[in-house]
Length: 537
Ligand code: NOJ
Image (cartoon, rainbow, N blue to C red; front, side, top):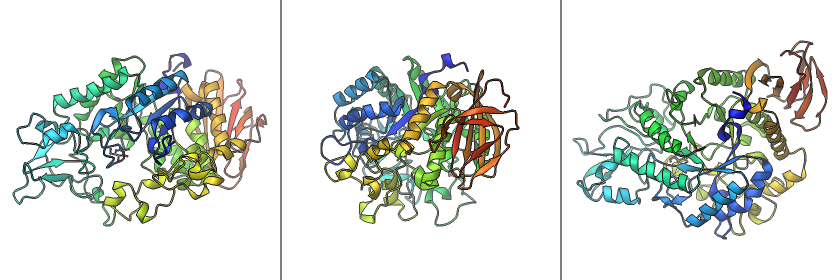
């Protein structure tokens, strides 16, 4: 693709803000929209292009905003509709896009649609949700499980039927086979698009459609007792059904009514099935989130393998993307260690595809240990003790060394990491060799050299701890050499004909160094090398 014709969501960098934990402005220990507005200059300085806000809509917060009671209003905990308008206006003033979280699979059980739906069997909203008769023995209608533990069915004694919920029982699933539901969500989308939102990250979108015959899900032969309860079954009849693509293309048509907006899908599926979400003629999401790196084995061959598989599976003109962290998965720095977090930064910012950065990963924030009495995550409460808790990756942003890390002047809703006095934005900004500065430089280079955004990707070497690849656009050629281990690597990887110079070392101390034939890497070092235009790679 030529550099000039690319869209902002292709060349740009997305930064996920988890609003509860970014910045508190009203002294209640929970982050809010005014807080985010205060911190926009930080994001501009970092160099990102778009923020994605996890849900800020009216919600009883059973699942911290992923249970929505009013799709078109802001929860008072986060501020007001005017605050959100101001945030969008301010962000746009800084040339930042704002992506909202759309949660179409389910509402809160407090949403007026569901309140009506459960009121009586003949309520006009009854068919907006998924209601079924009990089985003959009064038990749930079939074996479908909730992602968050237990049956997916909740009995409603008022009308003597069960309703289905993919997640918590406080999150009843909307019936996406009902056109009225589709229209209602489309109207929600238009509401925000008209107010200036630049698009949506669509939550749990591969779950939208369930089997209309309500067949039992098959048993998972690979399930090990003691594992995640939902893994006992294969979600054959509850997720990734063929009709889901029609539902998504309906949303995409709404997006396309407005210029320059984007639709991104949250989808956890194997790559071959994931890529179907681009749509047969790219009429699906602009991209389904690619979470392969969240669980990747941090070895050169495995990384190269998953990159190659992904590149090969993408439909022609399907735009790639990469993610290293989010609010549902353990922190990157805790998964692979702080040394390798720098290599991951280089990988994220040099691979072909839109990077999404999770707040705090730019300062290497780590998992925060959560004591049993501090647990807030409903998933952990439902399925305790097997390590799936999500609180540890959601604590307050570490801004500075003051009380509550500069996040709030009162005790925050989740504990601040112990290391906040030494590891925070201020200390990282003062140290030019910090991870923060590595991100800034990488982002600068990504902006400066189109090869890093719209250039081709060419795998070169994946051997031992070395991962080497090339990004190329016309005569702009970059080599990315990553040492994913602690031992030094040196050797003639490329033949003596190669020459160039180092643009960036992950240790920030080799810039300008000439490279000829060999590349020497210290342990845990990554290099970005500009190849002399005449040399072949
Ligand atoms: C995915 C979201 O990322 C997660 O946080 C949430 O609990 C579920 N969807 C349900 O909405």
